[in-house]
Image 1 (cartoon, rainbow, N blue to C red):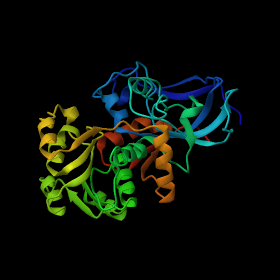
Image 2: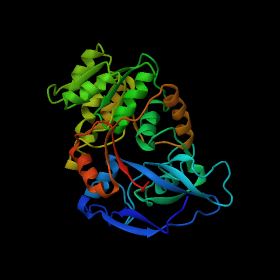
Image 3: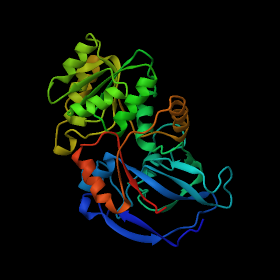
Length: 343
């Protein structure tokens, strides 16, 4: 395969530069070092994190003039001199953090996260350490699936018969729905859209709640569960939903805090979470994607159950700003994907 000298890419000049502030340009393609691979990036999946950086509400510092994006699938087109076990043409996904091989989150792992502290994947060609790349079946995009898996299969793994409450119908939420159904759990899904809830039922959700029609959705969860509450809650709303999540989590249950879509960026108050957690004896656990080891474990589950990513819409690379606006509108179901490298 012929490799060009330059690649098209996007850069975000600074946090809060806005969607229109994204800069489309070209840059030189680096050759892989001894232990690296060069990946031709075919597709990137957008996450709310990408939008939060663009509009200036992401809670951590990001690199100036960063290449955004953290979630990609592509193929290896060149190998470093010391790389073994890989071949040109291998289809790969890449870890969210180039330092997160196993174990727990650390400062080192956080600083190596793609598309924030370090350059990301909205570029046609990029080098990666060989040990953070791994074979991916079909179009398996990393971050949303592994975040959901890490939440449900973490310190106290999901069991058949458990009840899982999934807030929303974005990428993480839909993967959580699919994993929970495959594990034999009862799944409750919330959304403001009846059409999205119908799609959730087709994926196996046993109960659905339209929170625009049922404002006290926490009470509805308790009604559905016979006042027991949900054993696991996929909490993507932040301050806009957290108080209600505390009211409908089971005693000794788990709230997996993943996002802040509902109201955090609007200046909402988080509330007295420590008292709410104490009263329920529950655990509030922050989730930051997961490690390479967890990815391999998750991959076996997805392949065994033939779980495929749900893609809402695919945009051309030149349409990235439209893709960001589609993400901001929150009208999607599943993942928003951007095609990157020219075929």
